[in-house]
Image (tube, rainbow, N blue to C red; front, side, top):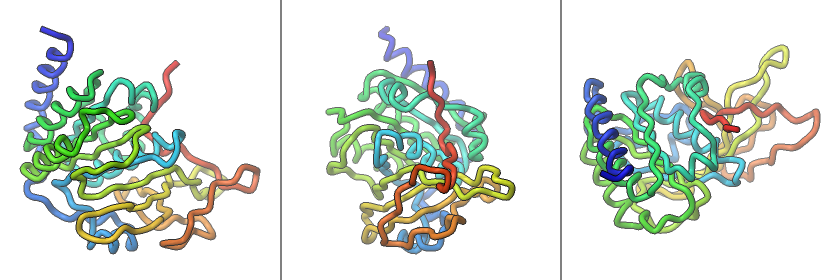
Length: 268
């Protein structure tokens, strides 16, 4: 039996173990907590859908992963995180304490790393059909031929059938036709410092570049409230308004400190 087949067999066993958790059931709309974002989404982000995420720059890979982890924490239930090896080499290893700081319990997460993007997609389809999984995060690198419109349609159908959300991270990829319900551009933003200069809440710049149920929206600068497992308006002064260009993070002592919002850690 090939190494890939062995990995898929092991992942199937892990999926079976997730079934002790309560599944999400039918698709539902989950408010994210940020009023403008929720309004643009018609009340919240739908579960049981395929959602697609792109980082604005190479250095924002972890921001996209952090956004996916935050959404998974918001949606609840078990999480399956599937990575193409190349995506892991590009973005770094998942970091348990970082996930916990975001509010995503590592004990409810199963990690699978596969070399072949086709194997990643096959495993994602199986995981999405498991009733005990709330979210399936899928990390793919570049522009793999296996990720075509048909492949994304299969993921979308699997998500709709079970109620699990499939969160597709496109590491170093470009947008092309897909069956994703929404498409996002994500980058890291400076956090607003707390009292005595303590690091602030994780912050992100988000833009909804496409959605099937309405027009695009944003950009928005948001921050993550771990205790409430929700997003809120950035608490720094001079926050960008919805629809206005987001100010770039400036270098220098006057810039708010950037906080790692990412559940990733570089190895080596």
